[in-house]
Length: 138
Image (tube, rainbow, N blue to C red; front, side, top):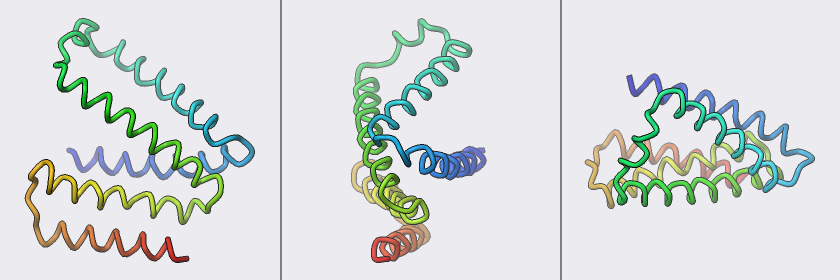
């Protein structure tokens, strides 16, 4: 089932790139990121209010909350840089380079999370890295 969610995520990420590139053309990239964030805020809290008991918020362990907040800060930084890159670069080049995040994630998962390293994972990461490097040089 995770594969279905991952493919849907990739599809919507592709749409995000296209719509963001069109939308950021004549708008400050930081302002565009803020508007996008506001939309996401309303959508996600709407889903939470519709599906989660509000008392569950209090049950989030502090350590988990800390890492969720840090993740949010990293997401914000990523989006700000991404929108700026989209504003001045081609979407067909920016998106593949952005996917170097996959390679960075793999490396950090090996080192920090202790996830297993396999030949398939290394080959996939190397291919993603090679494609991103080709885009960086074009």
